[in-house]
Amino acid sequence: MIHIAKPTDFDFLKVIGKGSFGKVLLAKRKWDGKCYAIKVLQKKVILNRREQKHIMAERNVLLKNVKHPFLVGLHYSFQTTDKLYFVLDFVNGGELFFHLQKERTFPEPRAKFYIAEMASALGYLHSLTIVYRDLKPENILLDSQGHIVLTDFGLCKEGISQADTTTTFCGTPEYLAPEVLRKQPYDNTVDWWCLGSVLYEMLYGLPPFYSRDTHEMYDNILHKELVMRPGASTAAWSILQALLEKDHTRRLGYRDDFNEVTEHEFFSTINWDDLEKKKLPPPFNPSVESQYDISNFDPEFTEETVPNSVCFSSGQSIVNASVMEADDAFLGFSYAPPSEDSFL
Image (tube, rainbow, N blue to C red; front, side, top):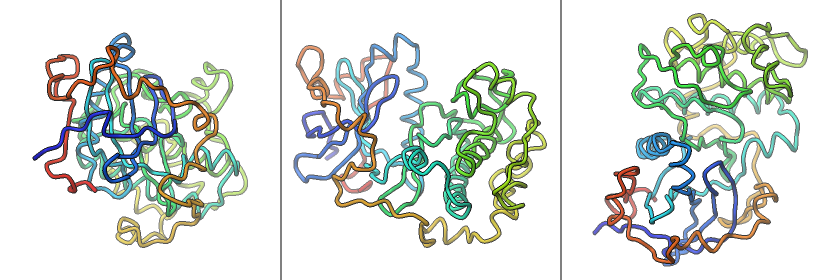
């Protein structure tokens, strides 16, 4: 029998993240104590901003992701009258952003390890004709061993093959590719631009064309040449130039996507089969005491009180997700795995 999850199946323990539509909470499933990260989104806010397409895209992408080592897994999604819930893997090594803020920069071998795992995840998404579009340190988590996990699929675009393009303007200003800023059609190669931006930030402490003034930053992305800085190897500098190429038809990854990226000399020391089997030892091990450990999350979130409302709908009634499928804006949102342990 398929179990349709509901909010009362869980004890909500801590706030571990926040987004524009809601919060991410650490929750424990009552009957077995298993930990999950539950993303709780307010329907009203989503509808007011006309973002339901993004949310449904996130659900659809999450359902395809269950078999890749560097992508977060979805266990259930369900809804009440006023909220949507994503029940996800709880990945407790913390955001890459959290560790990067503490350490300012990473040594090149550590940055290379993370970039290789990210490239593997992006290559897999591209093989499913999905463009990630929003790669940034806040969306990259570390698991308890120190491997990366990509999360937050709200901006993904399904159905983009290498020959396809799309024109939606979205993403995070610091990491936006020039063609996105120009509102030109774009393809998979926006993800390789973002990968270059994240590598640059890991090596140098700031995104490549960063300015506090957003207009100036946009102008930099469109027109400013990448200035060589000391401290990186020639191979690292070469891949930065190749990924941060303003003309996407000359960018690394344009011709043969992930395969082309893996062949760059920067990755000459990486055995990709071993990498994808998690056989390469991570360069950093987050100190994680238990499955409930939240020490790698920002205290700004974890010290916040868990709102009582996460367990209830506006009328204090918990609505079975299957009943709520008549809610047209989020039709088909609810999901339960075919058997209880297929995702565990």
